[in-house]
Image (cartoon, rainbow, N blue to C red; front, side, top):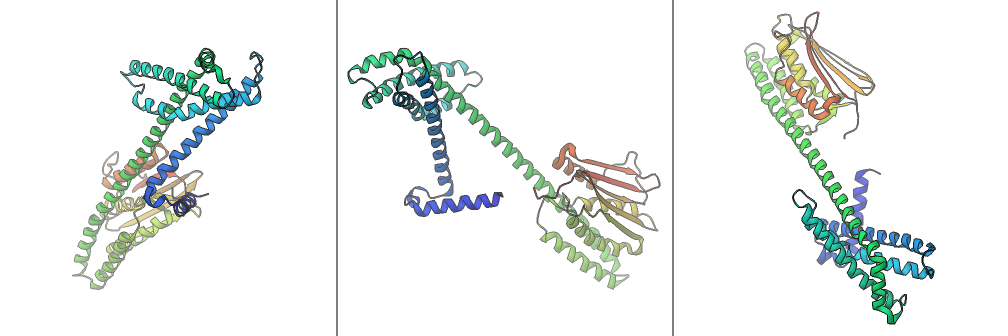
Length: 391
């Protein structure tokens, strides 16, 4: 069942509970209050089940224990053990309060140990007295021998009942640490997602003015040479900006969506460079639905155009290739331009941003390389995990 369906079912259940419970109008004014109530109810139910199972387990042990003379009847074994372990279930909130107040932390071990040792002894003693009173009222103990039964239970049951306090205590600590660990993981994932989203927003803000100013300068120059071409370029720019602004701010998009975005971008560049710019696209039939970081290709293509092709009077060719190789998506953007003047090639801001985004999104599962081609030109390659889901 999908998470969306689960959420709808939970919401329907909550609304149904609101409608059927008259207290919802006064006691539960929000979904959060209702969720807290349900969470506490589930914990109480779990504690009840744990007390029942534990009581039945020890009841069976007592019933079949040959050392107990005279042998207990089944009703006695169940009644005695369920009474004591239901009392521990009722006492669990007190143990939790002590656990929150006296944690085994650095510098407080001795104080916490003494506090819990005293609490476990006191609670065990109180439970024996209350338990014997309940058993007497239920007819499982002789009516006239209450205090003798208490003394007997202290001798027989105290040392076996006291560890239950510590079991509840450490069960709470284990659950508490688990919840905190999951919360830290969740907060870390949320912070990483927010940071990646902020980086993507910054990249878009960086792309828009940089590209816009270059294009407007070209349109301004073309207006004195070819008005129709300038008008066509302005129309393409308008379409491109509308696509950019309307595009959802997603961390990843499909390769097909990214190539459509690149096609609009290249339509403008081709007007600027006329016949000096040729673009070839070679995408494997099984790679179109693969997901990659949004705006990952534009900086690579812009780098190829402006630092590889633009300075050549004859222009050049840019080749975009993508293929699936087992569990990876291989993408390359190459040009037959002037190559890099630096050795090793210096990463300009667009390439550096792309590398940083890939490292943040995919960690060691990605690979990003940039190098001069032996025959001349430059190539940038990236390898990322192949996946088609939106997660």
